[in-house]
Image (cartoon, rainbow, N blue to C red; front, side):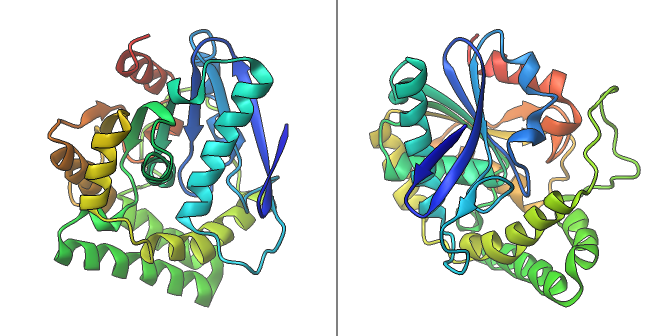
Length: 281
């Protein structure tokens, strides 16, 4: 399905029945990245997945124009409003959202820009340097810019080792559930990586949303925010530390999710169980 929004046309998919649950993926992940997760949620939720603007089938009206976190947050608001209108689901303010890394950062921006949009937001290891103390924030931004520089010099092949180090990932040895759908590095997926690193990293590193504004917005919005971390993510990984910082900001504890930073794709069945439990279904 397609939704026309200012500056882009968004591709999205809807499966299942029940409360609306928007899954917002990490990195280059588009609507198909959760192919193994969605079937385990569709009995309890109307599951919505989408391609962020600039990825896969969500085309930009002007590819030269920078994409901002505000753009992504507004896209979430319009997408949920469109789902409500076309499916007859509950009001957008009762919608649920599970965001992973980039998707978690988008969810946090959405609740700031659109109070009352979400009933619950699960924010799994948000890539959000501003949540960290100044020295850690600077280190996180420096690391992201170093990945951008590696990508600019040598493309995805040069950036992948830096990303793996950044997230504490070892694709050759990290465990996964059995029977997962293969996710080869197709030309489309490589193009998504190019957009994520080349364009969206800049949106992250130049983002101005700080902890004080986020805390105030969280208090006003009424949204239940559940920070989450990967069970096997190394404590030194910046996004893991961002989730803990978010939990501290909100005066709560982070939820433990299966696997590491990409646990939702490596352990989709276990992740579905964790999501269902956290959302009280």
